[in-house]
Amino acid sequence: RNGWKQWKGMVKVYLQRFWFVAAIATVLARENAIVVPIFGPDAQVYTESAEVLSKSLTAVGECLPRIAMVERALPYLLQRRLEDAGFIVRRAHLDSAQVVQLQILAFNMTEYRQVLFLHADTLVLRPLEGMFQRDISDIAAAPEIHSPDRFNSGVMVIRPSHRAYSQLQERLHATRSPYDADSFFNDFFPDWFVASPSHRLPLADNLPTVLSEVHPPSMLQIMPAARIVHFWRLGDESQKPWDGVVTRKEPHPAVVYWHALWAAYKVAPAGVDIHSQVRMDQDFRSVLANLCGHDVVANVQVSVQGG
Figure 1: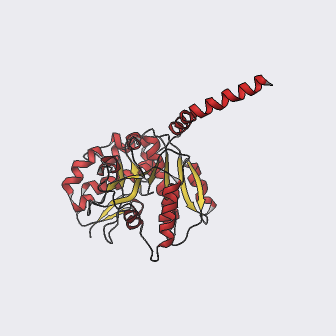
Figure 2 (figure 1 turned 90 degrees about the horizontal axis):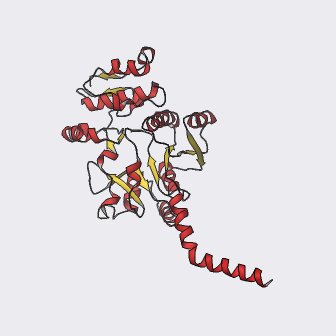
Figure 3 (figure 1 turned 135 degrees about the horizontal axis):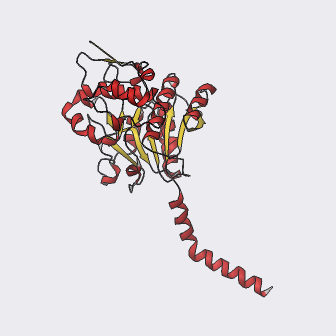
């Protein structure tokens, strides 16, 4: 009996001295994850775009868990498509502030060290490892192109915590008028611009296609280093790749290229890294034919129409 008490005492001392080592090891062992929201009346097109996004992730060798945050009413057929594309599907009850609610849920995913939140209308061109090597308190995000002291919430590196999740939920419930996601998160993180540099992603990590219309020289300068392309709308003119048409009188070559690249990933077999093998100044269809086959190229339709 004395031996048993002595043994228990030794274990107690060990745990008291080294519990923090175990805690640190647990934190370090947690992996990162990618979260993509699927919501609203356009859930079908966002599912299609998430499938393309998943292909681009596979093409660059990204093996992190992929989680699709969806509303409970999402049809089962769309859920199966997401699962077939490699996503873990998590359902949530949503109201009018759908995308904001889904982003807030990402802050509660404390089983992961950091979470990369990606809108479905993005395309990954390079490995994401460098984006997670940041010492952040809550988020890291890239600036808005029209207001650099504010950030775009469509691509965010999030450090989940119950504290941030609870505070975000309280803020959302206290909001009387509907919030768009960018306004909501910029109001909640007002010090983002003056925080340490690790909280600010370069524009290459969230490159909006509309930059080619707003400032073409910047697009050409950033394109070679682009990691994530984000398809935005410019006014009433289409910038979404699933529309299949670029409605500009004289579209910037970069816009045509990004749309063609998205269409190519849509029809290409999983695992084909098209971006690294195609340049804007090449005959896109001939290169794609070599990568995917001539019968696949026949299904790629990217039109450029006069305004």
